[in-house]
Length: 470
Image 1: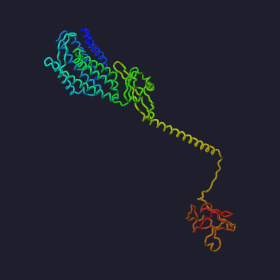
Image 2 (image 1 turned 90 degrees about the vertical axis):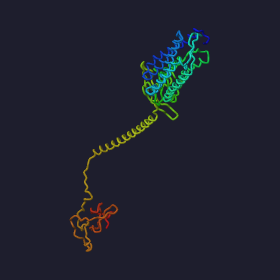
Image 3 (image 1 turned 60 degrees about the horizontal axis):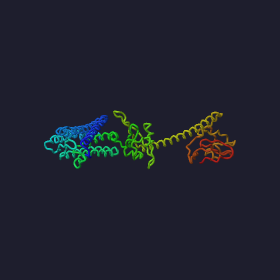
Image 4 (image 1 turned 45 degrees about the vertical axis):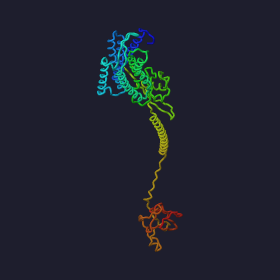
């Protein structure tokens, strides 16, 4: 192996398995602090299975006899198969699905696991899974050649791993987050099979199973990607707004595609303080909640800035900044404010006009109250009585009946009120009818009406322009 002697080659393999074990142990301490119980169980199971497989492989490598190495290698295969169950459990719990709780799926998974374990355990009899041969170079070990059953189980295992990745990709796409971290994780899953193929076709690696190392890298990567990306994606599931995930120091850790489209400065700003990348957003964060005004191609766009703090068992892990587009409601609010201002201006003008009018009226009332009052009385026209008729000899009016006029002389004056008969109205003025009594002139005098056909007053001088008809 790379020209190393037996001791050097053994040291390289021991170091590789030891690093895998230590990495899984350190990651396990962080995994137990995950808040969600089911997600935590999945991560813990994945890390424990990966670390346990690496421990069994290290023991197999250091075992003094071939039989013990064979037994430890089988033990590692049985333990390593549980990593598939832990991975699927984590993916189902993380994405909010219920496959890990469904009893039917669990029974099928346990049945498939026991069937594969049975094939592995009975391998000394059929040798379909692998064959082993003890060799002494470069150091004493049991050389393993993978059989047909191994590749069948490996294909089944990768199919189940792909199902888990499908659930994760779907979650990332729904949350509108970058899926490149998942791409790196997919690459880590290729390490175990890459090691197997390299051992088969080249002498670079010995015929020792390096799958535990690849699985450990995948498990640890899953945890750290979860803390870095998965957590923000999980907490923002179902939110169709621009999201920015900040760490405890207010540095940009992640942002979804909508946030990067809305705020282009977020592109490539990972790890930068939000105050330097987006000072206007940082200013709104200091107040807890604010309104961000952005100029876009279609005019001003308004975003309501809100924050949600993430607290885990060991303390705060950052906060999620959400920018909600409230352009429509903000424009309506501004329009209502403008209309209210116009109404207030109109009301102020009306108050001013009414106040001036009331002042004028009050002034006139005050002036009228200080002027002297003169009592005048005028009889209503409808209740006027004709003046007393003077004798005809003095040139005044006398009432003459048709019979008197026929005889050529005035009739005897009557002293009572004249009789009133219905009068005809023409053009809005009243006039005596043809059958009514008439006033005749005596001594050169002419009659003058006083505005009513019932009320007459004798005047001397020229006749009035208005004379009764008939």
